[in-house]
Length: 408
Ligand SMILES: C[S@@+](CC[C@H](N)C(=O)[O-])C[C@H]1O[C@@H](n2cnc3c(N)ncnc32)[C@H](O)[C@@H]1O
Image (cartoon, rainbow, N blue to C red):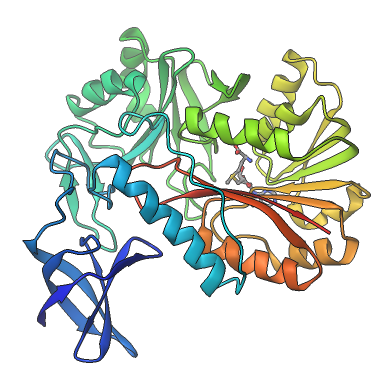
């Protein structure tokens, strides 16, 4: 059904909220203040849909080309109060907490900031994005969100027939000004010659990964050509990254967050970092604690962390390839730092924190909703929220990171 809506505000997940005939409508593709025409369907308690026509666009709507993943087409300065509002609202509505956030930290670059990107391969050649919630592929001629080292790789991959892969992943380093490429799907032998050619063209390394139902790079992987790791600068700490496991995609913005985290945690005997990745945060805190345990489930990330700590002489960081749920084995610790995936903390980790009650909990989050849910439980369990600041790691999208500190 087609309706005319005035978007009142932006809510979690990048949807515009509007009201029509006593009902709430949540629609994608609209910005606060805009008058739009939307195609909506009836859900249990609300309407849901997609903007099909802008009747009165936002005066600061961003009109240059953006890929479909960029769901916040607004001039950069206007994006920041929206994101601040999303986090503040999550804290109040989901966490049931009254707390004034510190002002959002903008990304040092509004465009060309991403050092990692995944694309589908279009059957007619070229790189594509899958439309949200559909299998439809949209060919993308350029990607203004990717950082300079990735631009040449994007161009190379766009011009080559890569029909055997399901997806291609690019990871770059600003520090080295180079990239790695990962092909997902098909068989490694399909990509051998392409991998060698890419390395000849200046790509640092190429890997292949099977299309695993467990997720990207969670199944078999094989190095096809060149190097498997690059060094990246995260706020003055040189840490390794690789195409096959997690690393922050906006190193300049993440570097600012790690630096502020190191300033606010104080000093102590022992700290634990859960969901540590390759331990970049632990490396930032190495001089503040006598010993740090970095707990991470991904073997490759743990391997990179151990190599980084050895290269940087941080002998007091001990990596453990473990599930965060067993963190209590490494207690007591004055500080527990967590940076979980979007789902937030598992019930076991939350209960463990409430039972063992470390003095401080540093919580870094990439999903304000699950962060607010977890913070509500920690505060009702006796912790006080003493600091929280949103960080914009992902300009032109609804995503926002948060740095926060709780004390008991
Ligand atoms: C959001 S990333 C943060 C990584 C790191 N702190 C950083 O900034 O680079 C989340 C990390 O948690 C890891 N992870 C996911 N589930 C886990 C679990 N149950 N136990 C331990 N680590 C887990 C992932 O492999 C990933 O490296």
